[in-house]
Image (cartoon, rainbow, N blue to C red):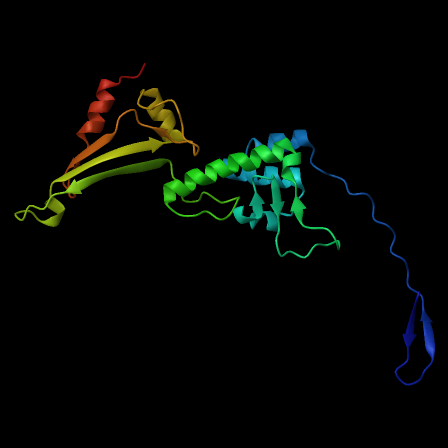
Length: 220
C-alpha cells in the first residue's frame, strides 16, 4: 500500500497496490554430467572459459575481462581490486584454491598463457584469451640473405634454418609419415624431428631438405 499526495492540496489518497506473487523456483540448470558432455565438444579455449563459469558461478561478462593482475596464484585467490562489493564489509574475492578443479584450471591456463606470450613476444593480460591468431603451423628460425651485387634483391642467395611445428590435421598427417617428435608443447604443437633448411632465392625458394626428410622417413 502507498500514498498519493495531490499537487493542489494537502490531502492524501490511499493507493492499493497488488502484491507480485513469488516466482516459481528456477528450473533447467545444467548438471555436472550434462556440462561434461557439452564441454567435450567445445574447442580448448572455450572449454576452459565455460568450465570456469560453471564451477565459479561468475557472470560471463566479468569472467571475460578477468586479468592475470587480479589473480594471486601464490595464495590461490582472485581479487577484484576497486570493485564495489554488493554487501558492505565483504571483498570481491574468489578463493579458488578451495576447489581443486578451479585451481587446476587456472594453473593450466597460466601455463598456456606463458607459452603464448613466449610465442608472440608480448604480454597477454587476459586470463581467458581467444586464440584467433594461432594457426596450425608454427615456424621459428634464422638465416641469411646474400649481398651479391650482380643479383637483384629477389635473386640473392637464401639460407634459412627453420624449426617447424604443427598441430591439428597437419600433425595427424605428418605423424603417419613418422616426421614428428612425440612430445607436444603447452599449445599442442608437435615439432618436426629435424630442422628444415631452405635455400635458393626469395623468388625461388628451395625445399629439398623437406623432400629428403620425407623420403628417408617412410610411413610405418
